[in-house]
Image (tube, rainbow, N blue to C red; front, side, top):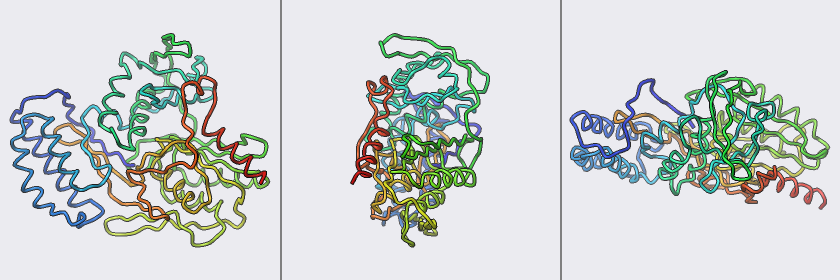
Length: 423
């Protein structure tokens, strides 16, 4: 997923402002920009047979009559709905700014997911500010600084109601609140396991891993976690598909050192994607037949086949892949492709359904505009966009399990491997 945010943008409130000359002009400019962008950048130049010129002629006069920002937003949303494709949307200003993912390079070491409408800590990085402060999994984050979390959750849930993108956008927005400048202090309010409200002053520290940047993505730290979760079960966790040389070397070492293992687990929960070709490289360690594919990416002027090139001695044991609603793009291509080939069993919760390269831009009227620029079809003929990868075993976190320091998806994968190895 790509993010293109101008350095200067107009942040409008979400109330129903009356139409002014400036607002009317910015709404018309936004209409024209959205219409032209779809015409010029949609992966299907024919737009599925839709007469896009006729759509403009019919709907631009409606925009000229719009009295509020909300009316203008509704017109644009109706226009995009005619395309019948997912992830083509107008985002209210607050939602667009919340999900852009630019909170700063410093981290608190807290990973959060929204479960049942509550922002719950799902993991704590070792040797992090949160770990030193005694924060525990299962605690709820209710406020960062002076800003409560609940209104932001409500706004994003409303914007993405019924969308597979919901968890990804919620995760991105809260993660932004939990990052800042290294050395800067912040106050975070939690609700602990006994439902007590606790405030902790935390100082942002440098994130683990190495800092890298690719395309329109914001700078990100690439973090690798290679280990054995049991003496005979290997594990490789990756937070983003970037830095191919270092990641592929580490992955190669992890798989080769586990040649005698009962099974192997790849964890891409929370991984938003990155370089698509890396999925083919990792998959090559688990496929022995030449010519297998993870799927096909259709761009406006070209087609990219995700062909797997098997390694000389691939790992032949049971393979489990862990995913969640914040697994997107390359993570979905990797997991969904190997699932279709019958080579991996997927554990966790449905992925983001954001397999396509997409862009979020800020419009002249302050709203955000998200649009995809390609179409992806898995090897099994499924369009992952707007659908996601459906796990073979649903294993979602709960507050009770988190408070007991249990990882439901990982535990389910370990149990499955142990049973498979005994057959």
